[in-house]
Length: 353
View 1 (tube, one colour):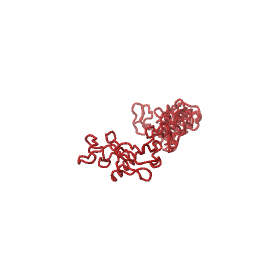
View 2 (view 1 turned 45 degrees about the vertical axis):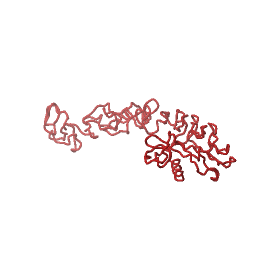
View 3 (view 1 turned 60 degrees about the horizontal axis):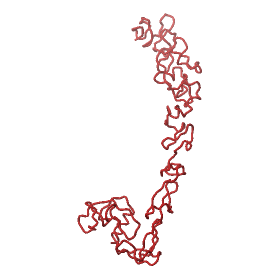
View 4 (view 1 turned 60 degrees about the vertical axis):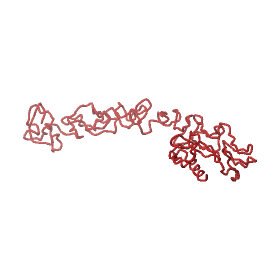
């Protein structure tokens, strides 16, 4: 029996572990939960879920749901100072006063009745002394000698796992209403606070912390007049841009890349890319005989005067008229059917090859 008591203590310490019938004793087989076998048969090879501890020192927990769920521990010493003995019915017998029975538990204190120690179940709802602060649960007696958890009222302050408020169902959550959240456009969605300054795209935002119905700042690519309207702080080419984008052959309104500072396409002279505020910094867009090379450089067009090779789109600067240097045409520049003005010497469909 002493070995069984050790096994019972192991079961009580680890109630969720599925262990062998040989370890927990009576009431368990892998065939039919047959309490009559009681460690007398070599067939005891199964496993089961141990029964919940009933806090009675005179019972041994068998298999949950079996006839031997709580088996009397006849002959075991019990009571205060282990001066009493367990009887055949699973009670601590031989007492004359309550003090001889020991303390029992908060929800099932022991009292001496007719010479045996019997648990006196505390009424349901009484809080036990040990509580976990801020976990949104109240541990109380269940009226059957055990305990049960009841949820704290909704809105009670808590501090478990980063939460702040009890949701009324026993969980500590960050929020369950908008008032629990801080920041621009803050709201509570799915017990999580989101806002226009949390560094994430969430809610109905069109981008990270911009756009949608809550955020005041516009996202890159949205139309703007000043940088103060944009989350990025930059308004270029009349759209919110990722940067100031002031290079002479850079634009933030290139189709397919609106909102990104992108190199102006080759030979593009479209003045729609010019920001009035930065017009002077984009001379390539307004001066004659110059165009963008598609790689962020403003260079001379075909037939434009040149002084050094690198100023021409074609990188070819020659004396065309006998007394002046002019740029020959780069691939894609207009040649009006004259191959001599092309750096390649070939003109096809009106463009230098």
